[in-house]
Image (cartoon, rainbow, N blue to C red; front, side, top):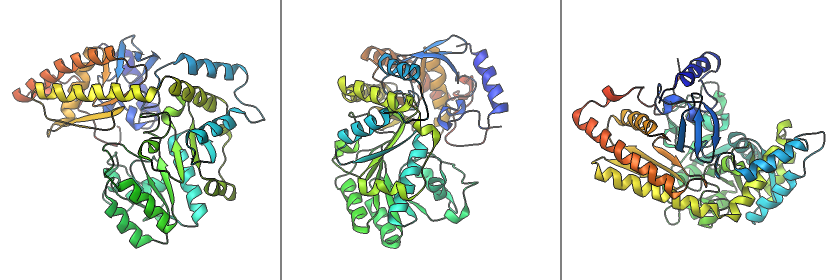
Length: 438
């Protein structure tokens, strides 16, 4: 692919935007600097056009999981356009936020109230504030990735890399108050004994136990139930972070699939099919505590977010999108496994099917990843070692994609055997985590 306009825009961005982009996961160096286009001019369905007019089938990150139905979904966009034409904001509140609160509590009958924000990280900060206000305690025990705010990043204060086990490595807590040291304590998924040890040491200080319902592996028998029981035992608020998992397996929270009912659940990403919206839902006795502390923001009252969420949920339910996403994701995971074996490559596959990923099991894995990205671009696919399914993905897209993967895996296997992987790169090896751009 020829991408001079895209590369020029990346150079401009590096001069004006610290870190180049607003989101680490969309930085070109996470794929392969020099070949990843980085910017788009338009998108529709599963197709994306870059600044140079190149067209791609997106088999990568689907807007980092936000575009659950597909790009420019006609039903969601029609609802949003009508909302804009009727006035996106005013001195009064929009009724759509009440309708969305009703709908989310209907889908999750254990919940009775809702508050709304516009991003996942800030909605998690809201949930933490509510839990601390409700319990009068300070410490948070958590498992998984939960955003960029001080409460979470403080887990890396005074440690080597406590958050390294929770999706992203190398997250520097510079700028986080040192007084927060020890207030966020991590435990690993399926390691109930680690949470038990945290509880034993901090029994009277834990305000909340926070975790994703699922990400990379299935919960072991008794794990989720054990976390719920420990929260009840010490009077902590049990918060489920559904920002990534929700609406992938069903039309609602993934915790419903496992039969685990939290005190609070947090949603964003897929909730609005790419439009900014986030929700914190929970039991009334916990949620009412929001009135005893200060949680308020002007832009949380605009109309587009809840309008998009209502339209997204309605369509998601009507087409049973969760079932389709699971099918498409399983097809991709099975294809990766089959083609890696065929071409003599060792890879590790993980994630629930709609949020799939694989990794090359070699010392030069990041070089392999960059070559995979580069060669898939040559076939007309935006692709990485992640695949986030959209409802707009069809079986024919997967078949075309896997045909290209077969060719690319064969090339990578050959390059690895001949020892000239780096010589075949047009760009740079992929980055593994957060690092400063210069």
